[in-house]
Image 1 (cartoon, rainbow, N blue to C red):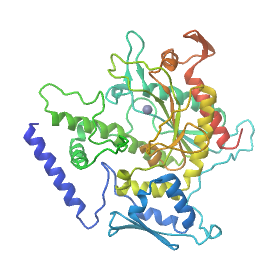
Image 2: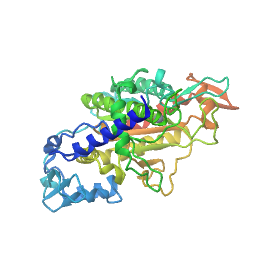
Image 3: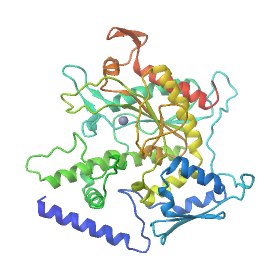
Image 4: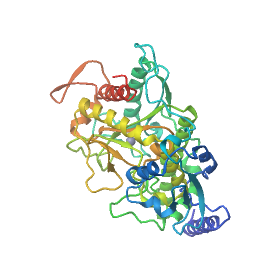
Length: 438
Ligand SMILES: [Zn+2]
């Protein structure tokens, strides 16, 4: 594609976007988002009081008040709008007059063990596992891969899957019905970067007005933002073509893949979903990675939506659905229990994000933060989103490349169990406590 043709396409995509937004059913959607099914929220009428609704918005979902730029509230109802002028209505929610008058929720996720068999305490519960990232042929594109000298390569998707397989064995031994958002190293989405150029151009056109906030925050779809490893220019390729390729790659593995997984998870209706990741510091060049000093642990509950996110109607819909499902309380409880078990078992210190809005500290456990991530927003029901040790920190790296093993091994002069088994055991302990078993 020539430069001028790329620019023409970009212009046409921008025009198409403007036209689509002035249409009758105008809704402002983030890249690749389906039009929200607002009618599905009718089932939540009168299930919540004004006080509880306001508390959840102000304390969990938009602590900076961004939600209220799009809403009018009275004792009777909440009116949600697409625009800040509040002229384009999206949805009206009627409140219950009191807690006693609340209508029942359309679906209740189990938060307590139902088993009568002490040998199988999680029997009757469905737990979804979501090992983060795709891996395999896609690991380098995802920029979740590095290799230090002659050491084995480190691929995050692999670490996540090993941990989830060990966790699945434990949860199944406890009697749980385990379902997978993704297993193996193939994408769940049938889309591929090469088929997403049109969407990439539209996303870039849309992102031209977007400015990162002072905290450097960018929305989780990250459109228009180059990511290390995936923005390499091919021979003869123009800068804009490389940007489109980069954007198509991001839409593939960050957006389409998570959307496809959310369909799998939401169809299965698990009582709890666990996303498993390993964290990292910036390692620079994946062929000459930098090892940093210390790992830190963090765990995310859905919340703290950014102003730039709630501007999109699909984010408003997802937020409202999460809120009305009342997952916030369960997520905070679950993240606190799993988060504490991880701190106690893995013995790395908690992450800290001083002065950052997009990661907003919640609960008494120091590693628990509210943060809006695509997975914990799109997956229905309570989601526990774990970020494990840093793949490129000296206190975890050598344990990670040692692979999984039984018993103890001396690594860097210390006798330690498999880091994967330790991580899985910590999550299991938190999950048992979440369901009131331990
Ligand atoms: Zn990850």
